[in-house]
Amino acid sequence: MNKYAKHILISLGVLIALGLIALLVRNYYSQFSALWDNTNDLKTILALLRDYSAYDVVIFLILLIVVSGIPGAPASIFAIAAGICFGKLLGATISAIGFSLGNMLDVFALTFVDGLMKKERTNKYLDAIINMEHPRIGLIIGYAVPFIPSFMTSMAAVKMKTSSWQTVSCIILGSTPIAFIYAFGGDELMKQHWTSAILFILLAAALIFLVIFIFKDRKKIIERTKSANLFTKK
Image (cartoon, rainbow, N blue to C red):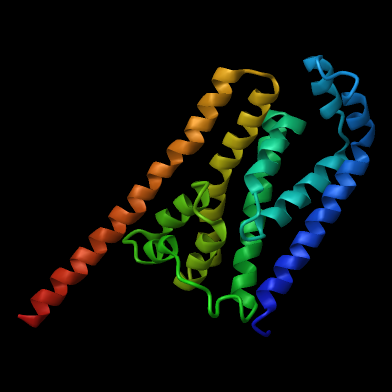
């Protein structure tokens, strides 16, 4: 595969995502039309948005998988939308499955498609996770923390050559909590439960502090390596 492989795959993913969004808009057209006449009636709006079929659920799930597999795509927005359109539990389940399968798709692509790993710029989170004393915990944190690119975390998993079972378990453990936070937050926002919605937003933001563990754990192993080198020189 040539050096344009990554751009070709991303473009394909974007086209698929746009097609799926078009399908959802077509399926929800009648609900969107009715919303204009009920903009002040929260119960009616909620009922209209949640008037979905099993087909809509499947399409939205596939959309989340595709979006989660595209580097830089705003998967969090779709996870929040899942909470708004499908409610807490179903929305969270769709988001968790979508995030997990999308991240697995990234790992699969990075493992089997030549060209994706080549000439990829280094990233401080990628380097930090790879050099951690407990790198699998780093992978879980990488998939859980919103602002760490999940594509970089998948790249770290591939570079560390973790087993399939370890990679899948790290993806699920990292992707599921943040998926639930987004979906539950979206549902609370839709119901105008502002206090609960803010709490979910703060909880998502608090995950940022997990990054401290990545760099502290990395610092430990670097200091240990330096000490070993000094001892060897002596």
